[in-house]
Image (cartoon, rainbow, N blue to C red; front, side):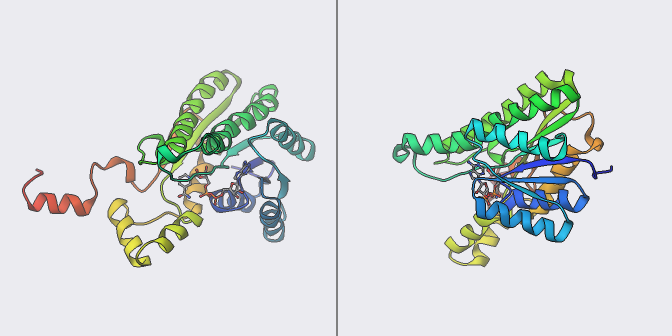
Length: 270
Ligand SMILES: NC(=O)c1ccc[n+]([C@@H]2O[C@H](COP(=O)([O-])OP(=O)(O)OC[C@H]3O[C@@H](n4cnc5c(N)ncnc54)[C@H](O)[C@@H]3O)[C@@H](O)[C@H]2O)c1
């Protein structure tokens, strides 16, 4: 596939997975818009892409604000003439007991992860429909199929993103527009650094996740970006409404391998 004239917006591209996705598309030769609420981070990523790949435009955007989403899409179209792919990646998460969760806590996660995905999508769809081509890729999470305690807003937001993906996929299929989700498991970003720092030791954290992830390791941002690239490419031309898990098999196992081994020894499983 020739990516030279492909225009991609990646929200939350100032760090982590979004920066990894922006990097891959710039390397492929696409025009990449780096949209992040953090101006300094977004501009740093765009400057780095310009330096290494000769492309990358920073547009500071808070995806929870409708006018800013509209301005983001308009800027991409003004600059490059059209929009091929929107990657809704911006997201926030925190873990907190439900009884301590405030209304503001709930609103913060829902506004960015769920409402932000909706707002950016509808402005993008408005410019994609007349061209009868385009694609949206929502970065959801393993929380679309399995979740944890103290993660109610995040689980609700990501579960919502999953079903919003399905609804928009059906609605815009007649217009030649595909809408899909990618659901990463644990990825080597700041959250993985934080998990290791909070653990007894880095080795203990790595062993824990080795036991809990069938493939036995945390993935790189490039591994998520490769799935996004597939969904943005013609290679996936018959896929819409999918939620592709890139989680090393984390969500398909009933119990982790260490627990399974000890239970099997005690004759409690067959
Ligand atoms: N890292 C993981 O292990 C993991 C796993 C599953 C899903 N995810 C999802 O992947 C996405 C990226 O996660 P990450 O770990 O790279 O996060 P991150 O915190 O490293 O990066 C998120 C970026 O989004 C930006 N952002 C936050 N609020 C925003 C807003 N209102 N408007 C625009 N930008 C905003 C931040 O400034 C930041 O640069 C999120 O949607 C997250 O839920 C991450």
